[in-house]
Length: 328
Image 1 (tube, rainbow, N blue to C red):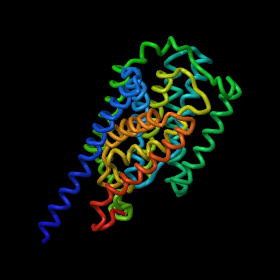
Image 2: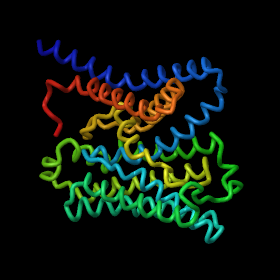
Image 3: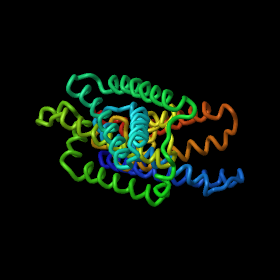
Image 4: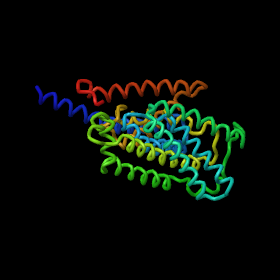
C-alpha cells in the first residue's frame, strides 16, 4: 500500500514537472496556427512575443528568489517603469550611455532594497511594503513623464543609440547570462539552499541559525538586478517611456511563475526555470487570446480567461500535495 502511494506521488511529481514544458510547446503550436489562420506575418508576431517574453522572463528570474522565500513583490512592474524613467532622464541630461545603464540598474536595486529593508528590518509584511511601493513609484514616474513629455507622448531617448542592440542575439545572450548566474546561485550555492529552507519552514530555518533578514535582502537585491535588466531591455525594444510602460509586469510575473510549475508557497519545490517557461507561456497565451478575441473588449476578456487558466494551473499543481503535510 505504501509502495503504491509512493509510486503514485512520484508519477504526480513527474507530471507536474513535465506539464509546464508540454504547455509551452502546445501554446507555441497554437500561436503559429492562429497567426497563420488569420493571415498575419508569423515572423512579425514571433518578434513581438519574443520581445515581450524576454522582459517578463528576465524580471521573473530575479523575482524567483523573492517568491522562494514564501512572499511576493507586486511592485516589480512599477520599479521597472521607474528604472526606465531614470535611465531616460540620465541619458537626456548627459548623453552618456554608460551613465544611463548605471542609473537604470541603481534605480532597480534601490527600489528593491527599500522593500527588503522595510520588510526585514522593520518587520512590515512584504506584501504591504510592495503595495505601498508600487503606488509611490508609479506616482513618481508618472509625474516625471507627464511633466517632461506629456501623458501620451512620454519621454524618450534617440533610437539610434540602441538600434544595434535591438536584435534577438543580443537579448538572448543577456537573458542566458543572467539566468545562468541565477541558476548557479539558486541551485548550487549555500545562499540558494538556505532561501529554499526559509521558504519551506521559516521557524525551523530560524532555529538552525539562518538569518532571515540577510537572505531577504539578498533576494530583493537579485530581483532589483532583474528589474534593471528588464528596464534596459524595454528601452532597447521601445526607446521611450510612457505612464503605461511595464504596468502589468507585477501581476504577470505572479501568473508566469505559476504557469512555469512553481508552487506559490515557495520553499524546496521552487524552480528557477519556471521564470523562462512560464514567462514565454504566458505571453503566448496572452497574444493568442488577443488574436482570437479581436474586439474592443479583448483586453478584459483576455484577463478573465488568463485568470481562469491561472486558477486551473494552481489547482493541478497542488493536487499532488493535497494529502501530504503542508510545506509551511
